[in-house]
Image (cartoon, rainbow over all chains, first blue to last red; front, side, top):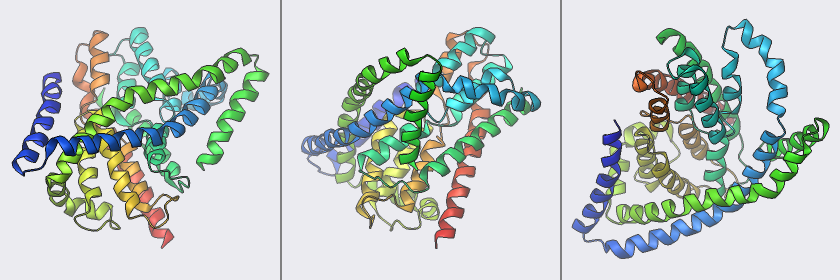
Length: 172
Length: 192
């Protein structure tokens, strides 16, 4: 598995360069002009990313999530969903790094082969961090009016979380 | 909507922090969060520069157009507003393919280029187009076939079978994508 991912990137790079050379593209010049665009993109993303990190981290550090968890516990108990997974499900769209930490803690506490451990793995693997992706992609092209993007993105996350739980029950 | 959420996150964070006596942590966060953002950017910068350089070669050599045309029958259903042969489709196809292989960091530059091309055909430059939102959903519901980070963490924690979650994760991903794309489709139809 890991061996495949290790060779894939070098092969992609080789193929792009070779194909460009064969088609008589000035590959070095093309690379440089693209690289310059990369600088501009990063520069455009910078303010939006800082704005997001700023708001998300203030929100996370206030522990408001723990407060919300208190209200959600009875619902989760009723649906017989393990409570330990709750913070992860709530944080998944907001912060990829914090769900990774939670998952890692769950692995240490219950083991990766426990039901909670498997559920956490599926959750982490099944969706990306919606807020982060949105910030990055819209920030780079200076889109300010995002319309229904967040709504649809969060709905996809919800579908993923619900599906992860049902599928984990079916599989394990 | 993002306007409201951004404000609400800050307001809730600070007010709840004041009420719960956790304001020290908040204060700290306000000072240090800029540094965290800068670290993320610094991590991203070299990757973006290198991949956008390589992508320019792929673009100039016509490779990208080839990929776009290859996947056109499928992509035209998802992105009816993007004309055939548009570079955006090539970048979208590449982004999804690289994402599927679990190479998240290499997928980002393709995604950014796709957005850039979509922006070129967007009539209102400050407003997200329908195609952009569809692409975003496709991306956030994360069509990852091999979640490499999760597998390596499972391995590290001594799982007997670290890869057993691949199939369930793919199924959950597919559910997330279908759910998101369906809602996206319904909203788009209502807008007409």
